[in-house]
Image (tube, rainbow, N blue to C red; front, side, top):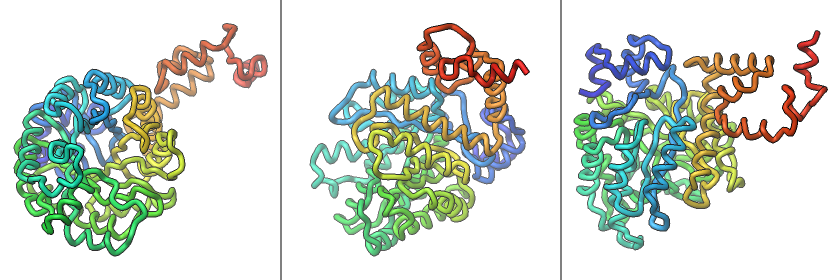
Length: 423
């Protein structure tokens, strides 16, 4: 049985008890919301780790993408990225590898990950088919895609991005509302190209029950991919994006009827004043399914600083109701991220998530800030370091001070806290 099926039957699992304890909520409430589909608890039956849940009334979670590319393939480096991401607060890892022995890479990441692991199965199949030859996309056999989904489920993947909402009909809305950037989702571009070259419907949509069969067997959470998400601010909230969202809303209901856990992915690039409306629209259309967003990225002109851009958009999205933030690194739009890029991306997203948690007043977030305020009032530097998202950087900055007085070198004898404490 899946976690959702257990919840529907009224059984509180060990995983639910662990999540309820960590989130400081009642197990009965958590069980009810999982049964309703407003919370997902991604945990494959073949993957052992401390579980976390995503959705209504819980702390905002963050994901870090790692993975090789054909131009840079170093498994040890990717494992180090994974460990750094987890150290600084990532709740999930996605293996998006497209270079090297993909099966071995995935098995190694799953077996070494202490958090949930996600994938995009069509990447593996397309990598084998294309092999640097984009003209061969029409030769992709979707039987291989379904086989890949099941093989990855057997390995222990906890959630999978599946682009099931791209249909012949949703593509007509995209075609009638021209974009600057077109389709920027890798999975979305692959499926759209295959559909057009073969004049066929998307098999992931046509055979969605087959997807449900696999995910139900292994309790894989479906992350309904936003294959038509905007890749430029000028393309946000267009007809193609909304047409796909309407399809995703229908698929959410079909998954829930089977007891298969499901969340929905969202944009992308969009202006600040469009984020709240997009989140609320998604929640309405998809009946409050957990929402997983990339960023959103609120400006297109900050290459090298897109982790900051993504954190700005992510904080606004999370306050509006988004539940899961996919990190953005400084390498976004430029290159495969380095280990340092991964660290910066995770920390930026962690700041965004925690900022939203403070507004939502969940999982003791406000208590952490209260403790930091008390430590600052007392000029208790060690306590401040222990509470910091990045203790190492905080300690490093403090150590640059040449003297060892209790106040910092910014204010010196004019330290307001020092003066105030003497009153």
